Length: 236
Image 1 (tube, rainbow, N blue to C red):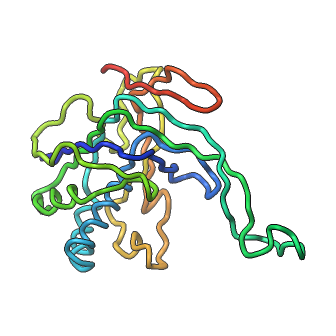
Image 2 (cartoon, rainbow, N blue to C red):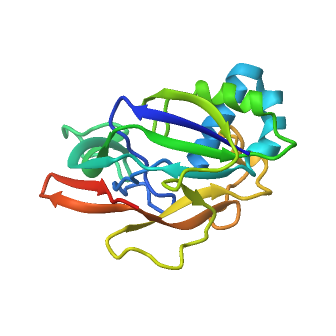
């Protein structure tokens, strides 16, 4: 059984690929399964408490995620000023004296046009009502500040619409040459709560605990310039 819901971004969306470095600035065009599961875990801990969230993680991590991308995405390409911890001491009397160093970095922010869909396949051992309650309480996905709001409450269905993409590492036999190939991260079936707990020192290994799946998004570029890139979802 699938639990399906729709969200609409209320601010610009940004989420760096899992393989990007700290200075990397490109953004994905959709939320990843890992980001969705972490948002569910956050909602579970806030509403039910840490122990309930830790117990629920045993089945949250195994959820199969499917996505229906937004109709259109416009990515803003920009440079911004940031503060970075200084590697070397500043020159005495310089304007940049202090712990932080001012620098310029590249960032991308995506405007998601029209709602996008999220579907979660759950087993008999899962608590469907709890999952639906947590989905209602998700208010951002991606980097903090990528706010969204629910436009369609969770609904249960046995089959998904054809425009949903199941994120499980399997690619279609035939791929549209105009489609956009990307990688989305997901949690493995044995990653522990301590590994995803941001207050724990236990490492979360990319490729073992946090898996990368190749995904073909049905987007084709319709326009671009120095400042933006416009994608539109192709008809299936």
